[in-house]
Image (cartoon, rainbow over all chains, first blue to last red; front, side, top):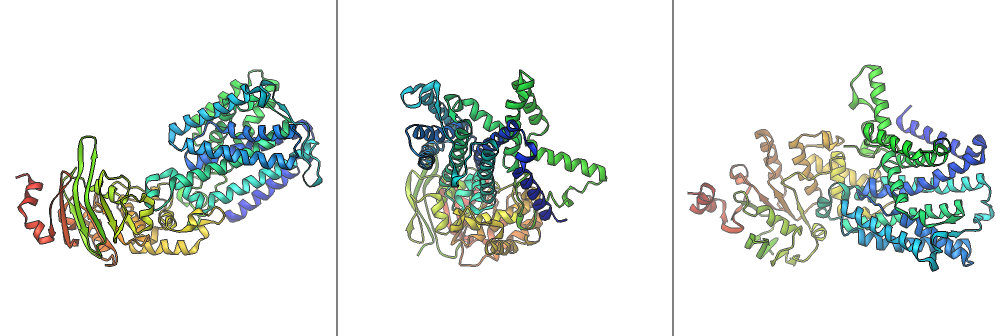
Amino acid sequence: MSLLTQQRAGLAIALVLLVTLPVWVGNTYYINIASQILLWAILALSLNVLVGWAGLTSLGHAGLFAMAGYTAAMLLDRGYGHFTADVLAIVVTLATTAVFAVLGLRATGIGFLMITLAIGQILWGIAYRWVSLTNGDNGINVSTRPAPFGLALTSAPAFYLAALAVFLIALATMAKFARSPFGASLRGTRDQSRRMTALGYNVWLIRFLAILFSGFWSGVAGLLFIYYNQFIGPQVVALTTSAEALLMVISGGSGTLLGPVVGAAIVVVMKNVVSAYIERWNLVLGVIFILIISFMPEGLVPGSVRLWRAGVRRLRGTQSSSLDPTSAPGPDGRRIPWLRPERTP
Amino acid sequence: MTALNVRGLNKSFGGLRVTDNIELAVEPGERRLIIGPNGAGKTTLFNLITGEFAPDSGTISLFGRDITRAPARRRAHLGLARTYQIITLFPRDTILRNVTLALLGLSPLRWNAFLDLARQDHLTHRAREALARVGLEAIAERQLAETSYGERRRVEIAMALAQAPKVLLLDEPFAGLSIDERRELHKLLTAIPREVTVVMIEHNMDVALDLADRITLLHFGEVVVEGTRADVVADPRTREVYLGS
């Protein structure tokens, strides 16, 4: 079976399993966990655009995520319809992201990290302290879930399927983005920004557009979040959320498509499932991250692929890593970055 | 019309004057060699010409067009390409992808987020052509990280040539190469058609001397001697700068 057929078969099986999840999981509690994984995975994927492909590490993404959530929640609270509220929320999020990008792109590296952190904290301050606007610590309730195309999303399986649809669109968009000329331009600015300028690229604008793209999907994740919880409060905007999203990306494997999704799954399962059995679940989460960073610094997904291949090679008793068809790029470097960064050092 | 015209160019870093009133006029199709000892300001001159630094004063024009204030990326679109003394490539990519990025930089396609770059056959085809010119076609699919230093030097040149520049700036293309590799590269540079104006920095005079039509000798940021190959070689000031006697 060729690599492409294998990949397609794998994707098809995964798709069937995901769509039928409410049937084979059955339990509402676990279906809800799955919905949460999906919505956090969208946030992690959006952050991965910056961390993995642009080489820009943001610690302010909770602000963008919550900007969409708060805007929609406030508009719904004032009696606007779901469609209007959601569209306006995305518009406001994109406008915020544009300001975020213009300020953040004064620097790269640690400077970018600090500026985004500061912006995130300002937004948190607004959510927490501007009580007349945001209702402060009490947060805002979202009384209803939307019913797109007349399909009510009140039940757990219905909401899961809606979240899955959005998640799959996000994932497909990211896969397309990663392989596109613009995706290649963005990774070029990560690896050699100086050369990119000399080659005729507008490095600043490429980064700016990538941040907008990331902000858009953060906003979409934020909307799913408020519809899932039917509530938003200032703790969502806190630094913890940004840090968790970053941990999802890094622990799963930045620059891959599956990595942020696996990272989101780990964090959500720890928070919700393990915390029911172990009071100090944060400790467990911390240990898991330390183990991942120690043994798989490139992240869980690419790290597992590496260890798996090393194991297979040892079993076969060969040293032919370069002959391994999956480790070498296909013709014209055509490789889908599901499991490993599309280009490995 | 002069291909590249530099007039009264000055640049200081703090109190250090690295470019001191440089005048440089390169005719279309000319091969100009810029020589000078370490710290003469050769690479800084290139950085000023490509727009990486802004000069303190003076003007730079490309085929009569003033580009002194044009951003660096704009100059690439106007037909200026360069290679780097310190190899500046994309280490996580294949050789082919490196050259494709050079082509993409001048193509409006670079903004496209929907197509599959690997399926843009016209780009791939042109990238392979550029690699064939430098003799790297056979290893086009190789990861850059797995290539030798000499091969990377040639990738640098392939990327610059792929952009079909009007003016090509080569920053010490022979640096660090073995004798055989130098000979190969020499052949390759000789084969560049005369439609391309070439300005080359070379620290070592022997290797590049016969490629040059004219030579400019820089010392402490100033043009000390300029003239034909024979003139500059015969000039006592050249000997003085190089031998300190």
